[in-house]
Length: 410
Image (cartoon, rainbow, N blue to C red; front, top):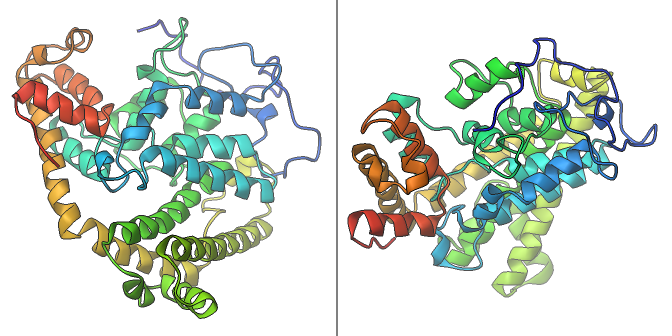
């Protein structure tokens, strides 16, 4: 590991303009409540900033060029990677989230680069095989603290990425790290290990809400996956257009598309359905968020963090509809017999690999094995957990075949 700077002081806010060389927005470009790059709390390791990019656009570029981001191409969203080229992966989902977050930030005159960056990074810590892999890795590592994908994303960008000679990780700004860790809202004790460890080094103020750009990225995630789950589920034949007619929230949009166009080929129907439903959700989110901002009148980004509530949200009625649609999709997709069979085998891959590495650290590649302690101890468990979490779907299957001399078919 690269050597670290001394611990940041507890009061780690710095004067405006401390990011030397970074460009800034003209006055009036950003809303008062936006996260302004001029006011960034900086990076853990001091660096001269880019003369052509803001600190947040530099964060975005570092994420895009990272190994962990490239691996999202072959990590499952719902379906395992080899099942079809049309289904979402973690990478395509992250791009969709980032696009929505950036568009919303533009409409609210917030920092588009920061919103996009958090959108790109929000799934960076996911295991192979989607939530199935995460659940399995969490269950088998409970004795060493379990597994949380947001905490692991923090570990990736502060420890596991090795691109720079002067430090481990990507040395992202405080605001980007804050967004990665708590884009879904304040965290409660006990904190996951990587987050607790980082809090001792450079507090991310996990008990407060994040800046508005991170909140926009979180809701963009919800909007993106509700819509693409319908898209993927229809294309996979897990449910039909007729089934969606009675689905909460989606049903009214199905009726409108059918009334206007009649029978359409599936791809055109899906396109029209997603376009109209997504527009409706975005419109509601913007209206409620603007109302919240008008009522709270936050004077700056710090006031957003200290507001004690989310600024970005759906209207109460629309949120109930979204939750009902999520429940429908969960039952029709994640509980579908075809998906359940695959999930059971995928969970076994993750569990069996972890137990094998714990019993014999020598099964790990040499550079990873060199980081281990004794068989079965916490140090070995932590290395095995990091190694498995970084795998793509296909790589996990290849490792299973290598370790057990047995090929498993999902």
